[in-house]
Image (cartoon, rainbow over all chains, first blue to last red; front, side, top):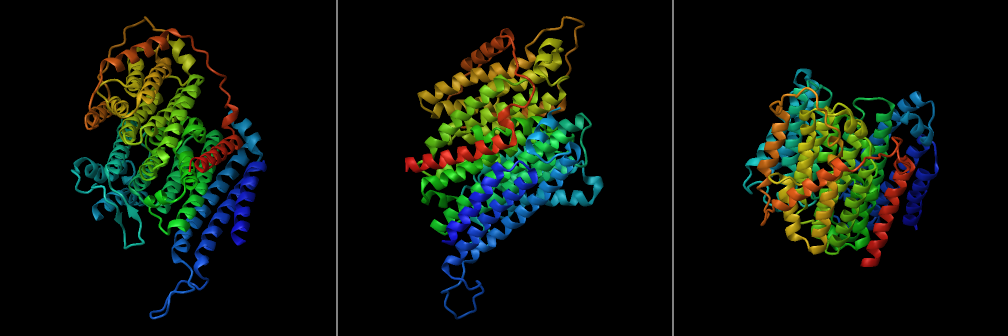
Length: 112
Length: 477
């Protein structure tokens, strides 16, 4: 069930990426897609159990979350944050010269 | 293992040092590239032995230092060095370019040697960010907009890739690239789709002409020569692992070749023409996955050379170049790398093409021959225009940058394990292509950006093509 909800989040993000004209909303939609994918990784980690994967010696391994997806996805979170920051800075720069945030308008103006 | 990892990591170390110590900045590019270059040249199967290594235990990042990785590290080092030599002559070495370019080459090397799906994702995202920063290094709003489009597209592709990586991990519990052989074909197709956006293949790579054509020439050289391969080489590795994949990959490659030629025929700007030809030539790499890496090596070197030569041309518009009466040295400086790319005997592209022809069937061989002719035709059009019969210009001794690329291409040419090396057929192709370029009238399209290169269409094409790949995978399995 949760997996379907998360896939729906990814799909909504894609829809926003295509349907929104405003660049800021496009970037936010891209962030929603990434967040959806990250959540899917976290969900995948929790299928084997929900206890935080800090195992003490001598206990059984039942019921712990899978540490590997959690560990790798941390990198993806950092990367997507960095990309978001870069994109927003440069979109700000463009909007200052073009006086608009609409993708089509910018496309026409920078060609001149 | 430590030696290989150190050679890959040294560029990062050198670049960061140079960012801290400003007097090092313009020299850091050749210094930082030397260790990996020496390792790739001097290695006799000792370090690049082709067995999977794991950093730090059974869950660590997997590396595969094999012949493919060696050739690609050699390519990135040579291209970086060639660009530096070229910029040195033109006195265009800037302290901002060198550390960034070195970081970019370092992350490309990390992608080439990586055998771990998640590590590939990290490496390719790093490449995207650095490419973004380099594209917008010089220039105004247009460059920034191109760079933003590049970043959005690259990120979109890698998000699709990440979805597929999750699927691979769920099914196999492993993140090594070989795990992709155990999942169903649609998931592999999703991986390929994400990588193809980055690699600039078929309609997924329509962003390529604007990004590579709009960047400063040395940056275009790096992007077209090395960076696109960070998407293509993992596809080759996947094709070696997944049994059903090669036919689809070959099909995509063939379509990419044709699309690139069609786009190139209507192009008016020299640098955009070269970027279209990158889109087309990368198709050859996929046409014969087993021999592709040699072609990628040859193409990367020539394409870097071509972009640098295009930066020295007096004008960027093909119709102007054809009518202005170029001097002979200018003409030769651009025509020579064009001929090499179209398959002039004695250079790497020629011997790699011979290898492809030797391994492929009749159908693919015929396709390669016809498209080579068209390649010679569209590449030579800028420099086969009106001759100016005025003052005879003395032929100069070729500058150091040109010699560097000639030596690099001739020395690597004969390391390609090709059984037969035809010389007559490529020469005939070049002569016919050149004559056609001279005779045929040139009617370029208008200089406005074609509609399919708007942001929405680019993203739409990329996602739609990935979906089609996904569904094709479903039908084939």
